[in-house]
Length: 273
Length: 261
Image (cartoon, rainbow over all chains, first blue to last red; front, side, top):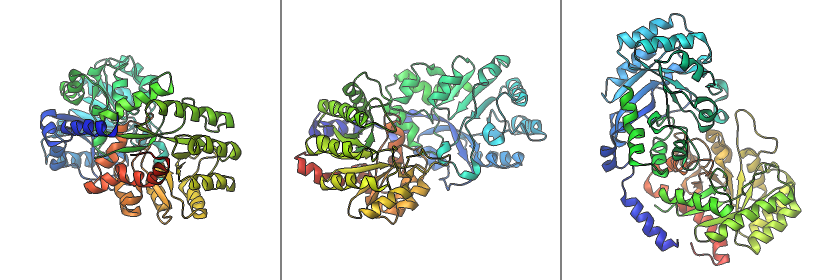
């Protein structure tokens, strides 16, 4: 392809609306399963607000709280998250539970019964427990009984770039399939897993979903779907920590069928709630 | 928007041969509007390559380039641990071959004096010089340079432009480290698409010292393009980062070789 042909090609490409262009946004109706609100411990990040959701064509955003990483008064963190989400009906709060805190079941109750949350978000590495901990299984049993989706954040940031005072290793996901077999009614979504984690730890579980924010490599989503069912993959951006466009462009880079694209962008997540 | 990608490899992409891999890389590049790829290092990587490893890896790139000469720029992989062979590879691949740049990785830190003949000859050839750098919170490899190491090298060659690979990965540190060394350029490639990298690079270095790259195939083009597409900077600056700044660095050697791009 010479430059003239290439420029012709890219001009044609530019005429195709990207997922982030206004026309495509309205059509796409994305459900973003992986955003965080509130102040980050060591980065000044843009706010996710109504304008952000509209600009990116997001119909629904599942929002956790950065405050949950280090705060111990999680009831107040969850209260603030609910208040923030009330500003735009497209935002659904994913309350944080820390099963090593005293009275964590009360936090669970407040989230599910008090705030009516359908999603809970866990940060096992920041909170210092493993997925083999019996309290994690107990939490899953409660969530299964309450028909609540549990999101596990496998990692928030590459270990190599973390602030030296807040270093955590990625969550070891290997115990998860065995736990899920013991709690078959639980529904779990792992956020920010990478391809290696999926290959070594997650294949074979039926009640497990993933987001795609940290799926990397050329054609990464397309390659993942060669071995992972398309009905178990959901759009997640990890915004505002990541540029939102990263996940959007991954769907353009990978060769996906219209059915796969629709499933990942919207229908899989929609069916989960 | 015209996009040239500073930082691509033949690893992490399907294909049995170098040209198959490059063809696949280009297939995905086309889907996201990338016109040209800079490619370095072959199919079988070596962090501390022997002299023969260097030749083999450069052969892979030459073979791949031969199939797609109007889409790819090749950089010759060299090592400060093997200066003699590195200089002969420079002659083979750049002086007498089609390559236009130099890649230095992690075999030896870039502040060692042994590297100087390589930099000096590359500068004579007007080759674009790319040095990998990281500031890893959990520790660098023994021979892995930091942006501070690169500043030490750049101070010895103040008139030679050098690209700071990955901007040190931990970009808040890398950008601060290279800010005052005006002959250093920031490569945005190969770290997570964390919000703020491009905004800080433009603010601290000036837009003319910031260059888009992906580190594909280990990275997606998408996540790295997002650092520029998603940045809160003006469109004209995005064009500089996506292509114009790199093209400006390359034009002297492209003209010398009669390559139009």
